[in-house]
Image (cartoon, rainbow, N blue to C red; front, side, top):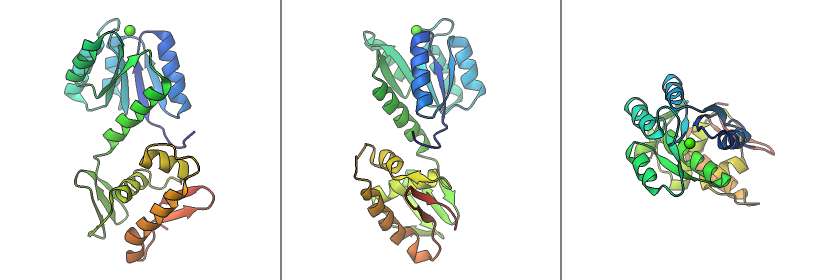
Length: 226
Ligand code: CA
């Protein structure tokens, strides 16, 4: 399991068996999970707390999923993935129109659900401007500055640095980096990470004297000050 996930997910689903399966799968991946079976209470929770993601069934007792979506969207930008029945195609469209970010049809494959959760979280975290020490990254402009000097990075180098900065001070394994930056499991090919870390060091660290990218022997890498 990947360390340091800790994203908070709210699951609003009245079918307890499905809610339970989702809860277990998400917990297994390291997410903090809150489950709510009623629509009204689900909306309240989503408004009161800062969840990183809401998984929302559409057919709920009390307020239905579409109305929850519309209400929540007026106030918060929390990513929402709706859960729809496979035979209700119109629900997907209505859900997206109501402000949902994505949908998963039931019955779903666990791997698909998890991939959509990861993608929604990634999109959400991706436009925040990051600063660490004298390093600054502006996702929307795809710009990186160190000591206010712009750095020329390739797309992959940028994505790698972005991931390191989002997780500054956390030790990241090569596997976690591969999965998050390359987006798939590249069995036995983790040396591609080492290669790109080397490129990044030549641009981000070496010209500036002070290193921010550190190797943790036998584990992976961390971005931190000294
Ligand atoms: Ca339902």
